[in-house]
Length: 253
Ligand code: IPE
Ligand code: IPE
Ligand code: MG
Image (tube, rainbow, N blue to C red):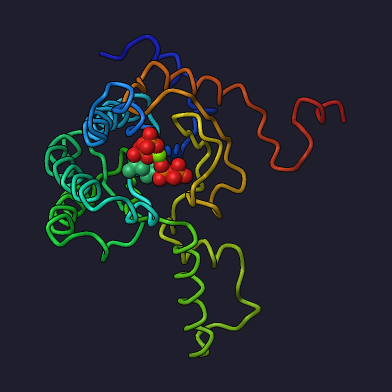
């Protein structure tokens, strides 16, 4: 059964964001407040992931991108990195059947080869199993960093120039987009960050050119589907001008 809140947000499909991206931040602070180990915060955070994936599917969001692990996060203490990788693997295995049942396709953006072999193996299984699903894409950013993504794209384009597959005049914005991990996906309409930090932390720098931003103080483990729906409703009231004149003011001629 859909809750009223979810019904409200999805009623107006026209202004529902097609692509929502979330910087899931604040797990460590959540645990610290409760005098617990940071890893407990990550465990609780993975429960929030479950809830928000389910809510997104119910509401009718087409693409949900979740920043789960950044290229910079490798510099955390080894024990925390290990725990995060173990949790990631657990999530990918535990959610496999539900993703399939709900016709959600798993996708990843980021440095696949940097992930531990056992995580890669389970990831590949879920990617393959869910590859044909079309109701929603769950896009996990794993060992993802925008600068790495852009560097990799430049390298690929440069190789094509060197082999004369491409000429400089053929380098367009669309061509650059096509060489990013997010190739083929629309840019995020809305980027949400939890835990009150006003920064992008190397997330989707190119793709965020015209994304609407929403920052909430709520720590990720405390984030609920009710707050998610409130944010979507807030998004629905925004005037996305893309540098032009607002529709409401230009109507007069
Ligand atoms: C987000 O929570 C999870 C990851 C970055 C992997 P943090 O672990 O960054 O939590 P805080 O920011 O220290 O509270
Ligand atoms: C951003 O959070 C990365 C993820 C949510 C995976 P961080 O906690 O790593 O970002 P900073 O260090 O506060 O910028
Ligand atoms: Mg953080």
